Length: 108
Image 1 (tube, helix red, strand yellow):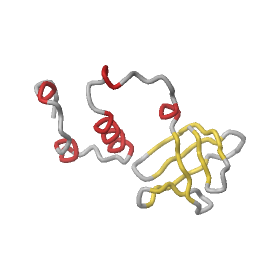
Image 2 (cartoon, rainbow, N blue to C red):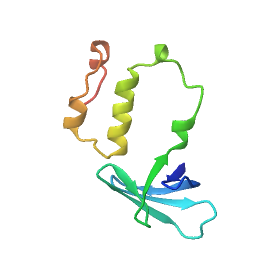
Image 3 (spheres, rainbow, N blue to C red):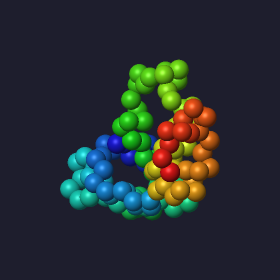
């Protein structure tokens, strides 16, 4: 993962643990683990400044084209956001619109 600070600094890191609002990482070149808190959808560093968190899988190039995907890009992005925000409640999943041919295979 990459941590991007407001001043332009980019740090490579490895996730140690994650919750809906807390991310604990090992930052390359830093001896102690670093914790980030999510406040109103914004990740905040221990130094109280906002940061952007970019996961390695978000940077991967050469993803399969949309034509081979089971769902739309918009639905996939929404589901990933729900998972990252810890919003896995049944109600959130029920609000997602699945293509009719997939409804029979989905487990509630």
